[in-house]
Amino acid sequence: MKKDQIKKFTGINGNSRRIRALNTRLNKIYGPFKPFRPKEGVEELIVTVLSQNTNDINRDRAFRNLIDKFPTWDGVLAAPQKKIENAIRVGGLAKTKSRAIKKILGEIKSRYGRFTLDPISKLPIDEAIETLTKLPNVGVKTAACVLVFSFGKPVIPVDTHVHRLSRRLGLVSEKATRDQTFYILMEIVPEKLRYPFHIYLIRHGRNVCKSQRPMCGGCALSDLCPSAGY
Image (cartoon, rainbow, N blue to C red; front, side, top):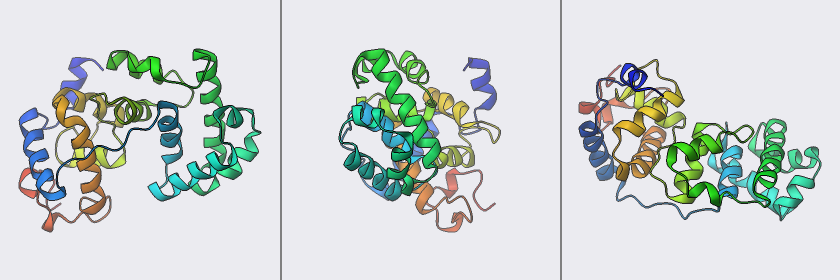
């Protein structure tokens, strides 16, 4: 994303000073940041695919069903799509996701000779994002999840909660897409805060700043939020 586009879609609060203030406030609400235990790269990628348009509980059930049915990635790749579809059905969009999983695993095996994404961990972030998004059905958000959760890279995935709160808090403009929001946040969020800020925004989006009927009256960020009360 070019710098003039970043400037165009950056919101009125789109600066590192406001990010630090928000992060400090969120830290007081939700407590000290604790990173998740890293997953292996391919596992994180498949889990992220399964997470699309579902909740964490059904995502995890779908992944466990998949691994119980096919203990190895070779087994998943060799399996008929219909059997994968049946295994992950609890996560929703089973036909679409099963097709994507087979294509992704096939491309990884073809590219690296085995089921690994470790070579990507050695790349600069921009190049790693570009490389991952060349995999079938892998977008910027999915790539970012792999980089931060598996390889500890300073990136900030933009899911529905992060995107919604970034717009409401004035970090990005109302017209910014998810991918545009990602590149803007990568510019304005200090590296050390990207992972915790991501987690805090998700928690706040689930608990307070909900898609429907946000609880602005009881929100500890209301004095920092241009959307409070609307």
